[in-house]
Structures are given as structure tokens and as C-alpha cells.
Image (cartoon, rainbow, N blue to C red; front, side, top):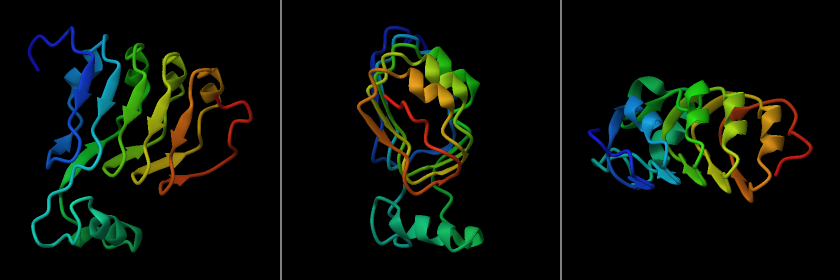
Length: 153
């Protein structure tokens, strides 16, 4: 990504980016807001640009006929803890999968977290209780299980 070491706001929502999550984004240590929401194309196979049809196909198990759009990968792994200045993390409506790493607890400035409508699994890490500034938590329409940490936010 070149030298974007001073970047504080990355807003790439509602585009047609695809592929895996760029590793260089984890190096943006001054980043305060990352918005990668709604990465779906509207090519006639999709009735809405937000990917509603794509997601419904996933829910029905029809992964073979899904559009290969959206950013995919295990974005919320241990590397996420390096983005210590992050205040807003918006990842909704993509193909992010895997567990939410306990390293999310290192994001002490996080106020808003939206990872709704993805393919996340596992439970919310107990370290969510360390996010004292968290005001909004959106994780609906994933495959999360377990208990909700009692002292979230």
C-alpha cells in the first residue's frame, strides 16, 4: 500500500473489492477508522447492491452459485490487536470468517464494532469486557455461539 503510515481514516465501503484482506492494512498503526462494509458487485445476479441475494444463498448452503465478490478471510485474527488506535471497525456484509481473536481486547479506543452479516464462528472473546469505550456492538447474522461476556463495554 505504499507509505500510508499516517493514515487515520480508511473508508472503502460500498465498492466491489474482492480477494483476501490486504496484510498491509494491519501495519496502519495510526488508523482510527476502518470501513470495509458492503463489498459486493451488482452484476444482475444480485437484486440489491448490498449483497442480500448473495448472503441468502450462503444461508441456504448454496455456496457453489454464490457470487465471488466481497472481501474474504480471517480478518479478526491475532494481528487485529496491532491497530491500537482504532475507534471504529466496520466490516459488515462481507465474507469474513473464523473466530474473533481475543487480541481485540487490545483495541482500548474502540467505540463501534460492526461485523454483522459475515461468516464468523465461535464465541465473543471474554476480552470484549476490556473494551470500556465500546458503545455499539453489531455481530448479528453470523454463526457465533456461546455466552455473551457479561461486562461488555
